[in-house]
Image 1 (cartoon, one colour):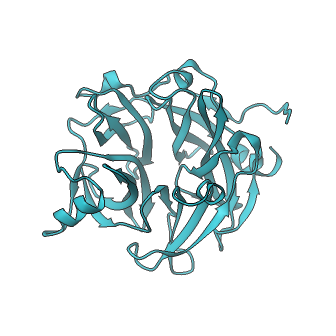
Image 2 (cartoon, rainbow, N blue to C red):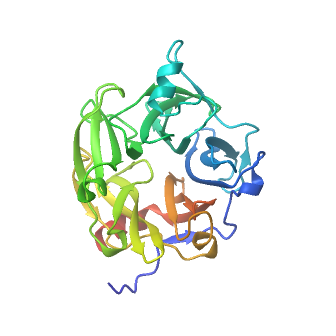
Image 3 (tube, rainbow, N blue to C red):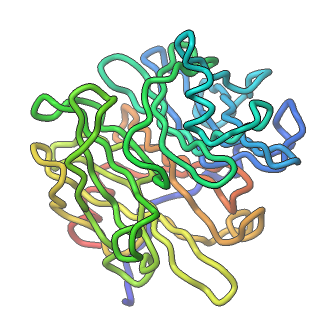
Length: 320
């Protein structure tokens, strides 16, 4: 579809904002980050950190302006209740405690706390894990929601109709269902159910699959959701970012959705990396001036950021 509309997203001229060479340990990729701005104005970024031997860690960096980040000295630690360590390792499919495979974190503000949804995987499978943090140095285990082979989970920032809600993307179903965004709800963040499809691929740029990217944001028009979509190329896949609005009272209903991507591969640092042709949003941070910062991984190698006006993202859902 030919579109003469200009992009609603502007890339930061200093991209990438976090590179393997910035990290305090041997690193071959740092990307797909979750980000939050605290009430004190600090930006905290939790990134997927890949070591040269392909161990996966979650590594936190901090910033005062949302652009210049300084990594912590060590990766995040994971903690369980006493006696649950063996169960945790068994359910994250890591048979050898020396192997680390925790990745693609999302930071979810909820009820005055910060919950981390991330993916854990090792020998043969992956699954969603929910954790909780106070200092972003240790993540305390909360639950293993849903079944194995499920990824890209994000939590809604408040209860709706007395229940917690989560968007996620199964990947062990048939092609039509595993390429869709699903929703589930829970009374306690531990037991989840009522799983159903919210949205399937609707446009050619996302025809392979779609999945949640950043945690939903409440607006007057609905829950703003930035998601990722995938298009097949002869030599691989191309990832882009889309936007939709979900109903405030019933988030299983899509109110409006842009047919054109708001973020797609353009720059060299998005084309060349560990995996080429990828932009993968992980966080959307509203600012006081009506703009948002959109944090995204590029080429499964580096971390980047772009800006947009919130009003333009909402407008794109109806007219783009």
